[in-house]
Length: 437
Image 1 (cartoon, rainbow, N blue to C red):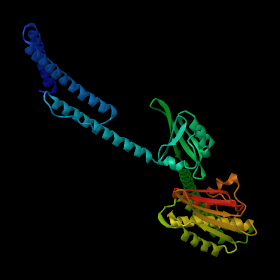
Image 2 (cartoon, helix red, strand yellow; image 1 turned 45 degrees about the vertical axis):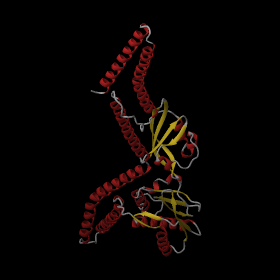
Image 3 (cartoon, rainbow, N blue to C red; image 1 turned 180 degrees about the vertical axis):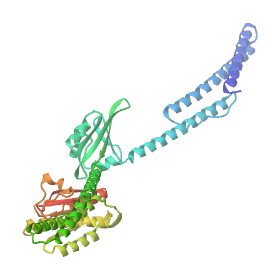
């Protein structure tokens, strides 16, 4: 028999005992000369009433303790598992319920900790806007937005006025914005959603820089275009070159006394030489269509800078080179980064030598946040703002003797490392090329 049955039997027994005691009291008071009997029956009735009250009140007390423990979340509470009339079963049932609630709360807490860790380690920056306060919601946001003070949307204007206005707005949706992140302008995808938090409207904003992804897509598209063009041009050029060479050879065997034959022979020879030159020209550009394969290793920046300083001075002894290098290390493909740096140094030396009476080139390697920055500056003519994107396109050059391949390959190497290569004005008066890894 369970708790309910035993409790009910105990309750019926105590009620019956109280009724009998009350009947005995009534009988004793109706019978004359029974003073002692009256006192005894009244005592028995009082005792029966107290027994009934304790039986009911004990249950109420245990249930009240249980409800209070649940209300305040005290799942360490314990209820006695002793006593008759089913109170052992009641205590066991309450303790079992408390254990279940404690286990459920433990599971809920573990799930919350997992979700918090998942959000905190999410690689995409998360911001929350609650009652006009903007707070970073995870590590990525704290790293990305570390250059401001304050929690108001206006405080985020240092990353872009449009972005600050977006934080202050309550509209949902997504858009592409230009944000000043990590010291450079980056195209960034911003998504906003409105949530309900304890009856208040809050906003969750995802900020995802996509500049590096777009750069990689752009470079892949460029290499695909170059690959297709060089393939098609060579397919068309090869038979022309072969026919020109054959024609020149045949005309060389004919009597050249006729000036028209001599002119035709010279024209065929020139055509053969030109097509051969074009073939070599196109073969040299096919390197642009091969994406660099990065073999990463960690090496000392100081040794890297010293090596290129020696190479530069040997090739350009008339150009003044200054080198500033932090005591740090670089994580990347040393051979590819060496090719990139040599291209930048050579371009800087050529620009400075052609423009300034005292050509100067400056090389700097320094820590930049979580990565490394390599800058090459010169006192040449610089790169006009309208050409700062075009200079990285394949085959684009501003020099008559240039090929338009070096900077494109340098940018490919930067993108392959997950970095960026940009050009801006230099304090020396010329151009400044900055590689961020």
